[in-house]
Each structure stands twice: as C-alpha cells, then as structure tokens.
Image (cartoon, rainbow, N blue to C red):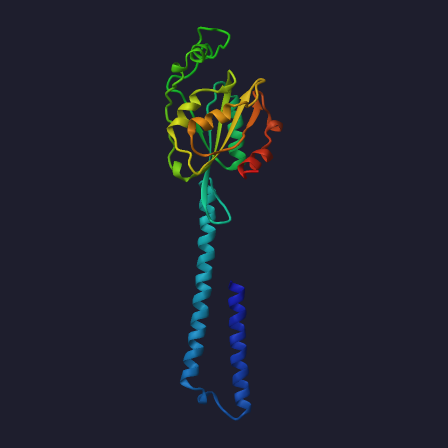
Length: 245
C-alpha cells in the first residue's frame, strides 16, 4: 500500500510540475493559478498522506495481532477466524503424557491434564489383581465415575481443535476421560482422540467417547505404542486429521 501511494503521489507531483512548465512556456505565471486549483492540489496531498498513515497503522496493528495470536497458542485461518488447540490427556504411568507433550509442541496447543482427585497408585493399576482398583472398576461400571481435580477449561469457547489422549484399558479409553467428555459441550469443535497401549489398537474407544459426548466433529484418531519415541509420532497424519482429510 505504501508503494502504491508513493507512486500515486509521484504521478500527481510530476503532472503538477509538467502543467506548471507548460503553462510557463505559454506565457502564464504561478500567480495565474486559480484558487480552486490550489485547494484541489492541497486536498489531494492531504488525502494521500492520510491514506499512507492509515496503511502504516493497519500494517502495525495486523503484525501485533499476529504476535498476540502466536503468543496465546491461537491459530488463525484464512478467513480470520481464531481458535485454540487444546491437548487434553489422562496419563496413568507417564506414557500418554509424553505423547501429549509432543503433540502440543508440534501443534502449538495448550496442555490440560486430567487428574483424578484420588490418584491411581501402582497397586491400583495392577490389572492382574482382581482386587485392584482398576480391576474392580472394570468389573463394576458404577465405580468408573472418577472425580477430577478439574473437568472444565478456561476459555473453552475459544477452543477449536481438541486432542484427547488416554491409555487403553480393556479395549476402551481409560474411564477418567469419560468425566471430562461428559462435562463439556464439543459443538463446533474438531476432536482427535489418541491413545497409548502395549498392543491394543484404538478400536472403538474414540467412537465410544464421541457417542458419550453427543456433540463435536470427532475424527478417527491414532494409537501410539506405550514406549513411543519421536519416530513414532506421525504428526503428518495428525495434521491430516485436523484438516478433515
């Protein structure tokens, strides 16, 4: 815009000088320039200067807006719509947490950990012990209503994309995730589940969470092995899910 305005001002000034030179050759003087012409030239110059100043301010404001969006983890699409990316996860032994952190780093998303008010101990997670906490909760669904330290997120209305991560327990998502899903409205949000497991695949865990939520655009999701390293984190696929492909 600055270049365009500068060119236009140059054309105006050149045309004005040419007119004055031509007028001098014809035997006229600057004094013969009419008051109306003088006012018109002044108005054009003032308008050009105003437009240049406004263009500069707009460019500066746009740059500041981009910096603010980047600092807050906000994404901006081509239409100017702002939406945050949130990576929600429950991690029993740290495996899901590592994957969640890698996804957040790759997407610029914010992390939100689901923490049970009554944390799971190593003994609680002993699946081979029928008297362990997880074994009892698996056997009795009424015990799966796990209270969380926090099940809602500040500025949830600004979140556009949600990654939800969890370990797989008996072929389904670890049930502490259910508490978060039931507590929130996913309308207008793209939801991408991801899980960690020793051998089980994603299975129906993502679809079961989608059914439980009842709202949101839930994608197929991805599974990572429990000992996932950087080579296992296929973010190209995650971005494809994010774009609806």
